[in-house]
Every structure is written in C-alpha cells, then in structure tokens.
Image (cartoon, rainbow, N blue to C red; front, side):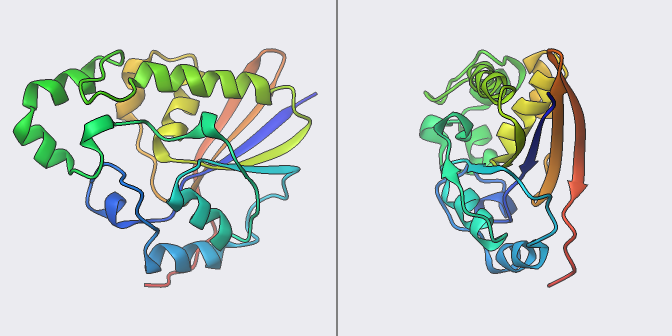
Length: 193
C-alpha cells in the first residue's frame, strides 16, 4: 500500500508579508483571491486535514475544501514572540534569536523547540502512513519544513534553511518504511494582483 499526502502552505497574510511571528491573523485579500483561483487544481483527496490556525482554515475554505483540524499539525509555538517581527525580537534579544536559529533544541521564547515540532510531525506522519488513499493537508510553513526534514531523515538543524512560499504544494508518497518527496510545486494560480 502506498500512502500519499499533499501539503499546501497557507495563502498570504499580514504576518507572512511582514516577517512577523504568527499571531492569529487572517489571510489577506490577495491571498484569498489566489486560493479561490486555485480551487479545483489539487488532486481529489480521501480526507482533508488542516492546521488549527485561522489562516490555514481560511485557505482551505478558499480552496473549496472542508476538513478537520489536526492539533498535531499546529504551527510552531513561539511563545512570547508571537505577533512580533523577527527584526524586533532580534534587536531586543540577539543572543536568544541566534541560539534559537542554530540549536533545534532551544526554545528561548518559552514555546516549542524546532526539535519538538519535528518529533510531533514525525508521529503524525507515521500514523498517516497507515491511511489508505490521499490525504490533503493545509498546514503552516513550519509544518512543511518539519515534514521535509523528517521525510529525508535530515537533522533538525536544516529546518531554517528550507523556504516554503505561500500556496505551494509539497507531496509525499510512502511505502516500505520510507517517504519519497516532491516539493515546491505552486498551485495553478492565475495572477490576481
């Protein structure tokens, strides 16, 4: 049996555009229009799951998808840094940010470490391996990073070296105890600017 999972990153939101740690904001008008334009361009799934965040829920809805929230696919908990820009946090806490970006076990913000996120996502991937049919998951960019890191057996230290643009598709197919990866395919989205 081959398991297939298609991950879609969320449409743009103010926090994505401003390099601000996610604070629960909604997708913006351009992101919503692009997601609506891409509706129907994804393979038909047997099930749909989403990160619990507002922007993932709204992206799924704009893509014409209904589904269930999966707490295991929540974005990285950045604790007290939520809602602040990376520049602001770096200016106030340069050593903490440097440690966070280089040590995947570090969580100076009081939230979750990258290592913990990768472990959580790995558990979800293992459970999903037993699911027959295609799963479509609308998830936060850092969840996609964790998926790629885990699928390829890379150390968590590479996490921050992976870029995940809005409304891109990363696909996994798995059998015989391993995952194959296809990443970064943009959704078929016409320009709506």
